Amino acid sequence: FGNFARLFSDTLFMRWLGNTLLVSVCSCALTTLFILMVSYALSRLRFRMRKPIMNVLLVLGMFPGFMSMIAVYFILKAMGLTNSLLALILVYSGSGALSYYICKGFFDTVPRAMEEAAILDGASQPVVFAKIILPLAKPIIVYTVLTSFIAPWCDFIFVNTIISDRDKYTVALGLYKMINAEKNSFNDNFTVFCAGAFVVGAIVVSLFMSMQKYYVEGITAGSVKG
Image 1 (cartoon, rainbow, N blue to C red):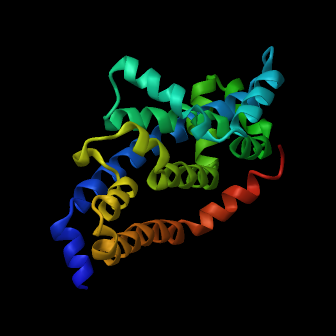
Image 2 (image 1 turned 180 degrees about the vertical axis):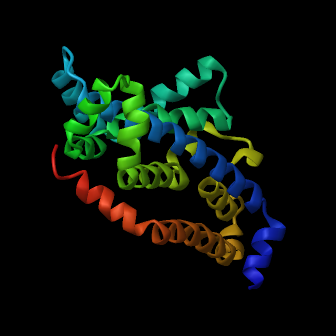
């Protein structure tokens, strides 16, 4: 317990945890919104170049995000957004729509008769999406929220590239710097690092356990059709 006391009193862990929560929640909200809208459009709407767009998005989603790290850094530097939490939110949520395929598979299973009946009653596509599709898509929404939250919560590479101000560190970068700041800091702070890792892991585990039912339903329902 002394390690937990040192973690909260001798470090900026609470500041780092707050930064991580802010970035993760904002990125999660934007990414979930992007994925739901793109998935609905590709599942329900029929337009020219629909299938080529789906194929391009699928191929781009196969490449790891860190391959674009250098280009993203220089773009953010040109815009004056380096060393800011806003930059992290933009980076994490910018490519969110590339993960559309599971959510689209879920929307494909929703009967079109319900949508057609609403349109005959005068509902527009946005109304159908908001009042008919989304209430039926609770499992896939929970799945999307969880996967969108965990990526920025655990990321280290982009944070280490973009953030240099100690007050703006996320938990991953802050704990790493804590045990690598000085020559003997690893031996002195390793147990404190483990305490911080336990807190971070406990939050993620609690989140998954509380939403496990919907997570399983979402991923299984979304894999019925591609």
